[in-house]
Structure formats: C-alpha cells, structure tokens
Length: 223
Image (tube, rainbow, N blue to C red):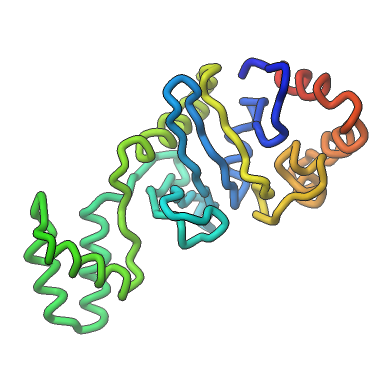
C-alpha cells in the first residue's frame, strides 16, 4: 500500500501483515476500495478446528455481534464456503425436526427449492429463522465479493492494489478488546497479545516513537 502524507493509525499499511491480522482470532476490520467507494466491515473468528467463521456488518451498531450476518466459513485448508439460501433452509429444517414442528417442516420442504417466495412466505420464513436462531444469508453482491477476493489475493501472495485499504476497528485482532493505548491502536494488538504473537518489541518501539517519529517508523514497516 502506498504511504501517504497523512496516515490514520487504524489503517493497516503493512499489507504483509494484513492476513496475519485477519486470522488472529477475533479480528474486526473494514475493507475499502478508494476507486469505487465500495466498503464492508467484517468479523473473522477462529474456531477450534482451524477454520474461520466470517461475518459481515449488516445492522446499525458495529459494536454488537447481532449486527453481523454470517457470510461463510474458511476451512482449515483455506477453502472458502459462502453461506447460501440453501444452507439457511437446511439449518431451519434441521431445527424444525428437532422441535418436532411438523408445519414448519412441511413449509420448509415446500419452499426451499423455489427461486422466489411470496410476501407472506418471506415473512413466515423470516419469523421462523429468528425464532429458531438460524442465521440468514447475505444477498448484497458487493459484501459477498469483497472479502473472498481480498483473502485470495493475500493467501496467494499477490498483494493488494494501492486503491484497496484495510482498516482495523480499534479492537485487538486476537482478543477483541477495545484498544486505548496509541501504540496498541497503531499495531492492532494490545501489549499482552502482541507478546504472544512475537510483536512485543515492535509494540515497545511504537510506544517509544509515538508523537515523535511515528510516520518514519510506519514507512519502515511498509517498506
């Protein structure tokens, strides 16, 4: 990413570290395309089996987990599986069977292969998804496309074009705690998590330089 004269501390300028940030455990970040103005905010949470659950901000309060919709799962081998309408129906059908709700079972089986639903059916679907706490799926094509495109570029070591920016949301990528110390905000990790990732010396250097030579140091990281 090209260094600019004025650099915001939440901008992850070192693209070599963006993938590490995204996969730290509980990362929250925004990907923006300066050329088109398109942007989306994501949560990437590591699972015990080595996979990552990816959600995208679709609500009104980006600090609340309920404002994010499940986008898909990145398995331990890096394969991307987006959540689809079929996944939504299958999960709801499974929940209906567990609950013994014969009406809902019949409803899901009758509408899950249709290309479109009536307004009444759509309302019934939304009501039951909420009642059984089944995640919906994302239909916004931009939000669906931004994350896997960025992820693949990083995994394949192709780097990111200058117009693509990745911004962290002011929370530690590993533990999701709010960051308040300037050095932590700049790095994207608090000192404890920075230590576990072998970045404590970098955090200490940032803490020493902040307010004096930060811009010079930030450029050295991106070099």
